[in-house]
Length: 130
Image (cartoon, rainbow, N blue to C red; front, side):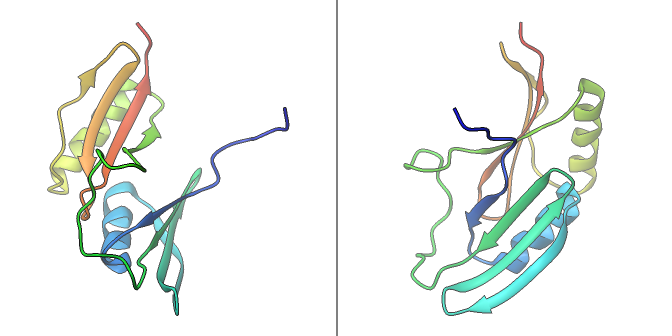
């Protein structure tokens, strides 16, 4: 099997790329590294070490909110290295006024869930298998 080293990036269709970039930059600590307007819509790329997210709109996109029950993306999950780091994320999200879940335990680890401005589900995850 040919090699795959890591996930390169995620591209999300959003209603307002600038608004979404502001959210990701403020809440997840990314920085805007690229921005353009074109015939295919607006594209803004935000990144931090190990994470790159392309945020784009499309002229034909209907003004609908994200629904994880539709075919396509269910949620976007980021690995967090430890429970104390996940707890620090929880404190940060609350301080930023972001609606989020409490830290929840599953058979796979610890989860902290939030939503971006378009209701796209984001999970911060610590692997702690039972």
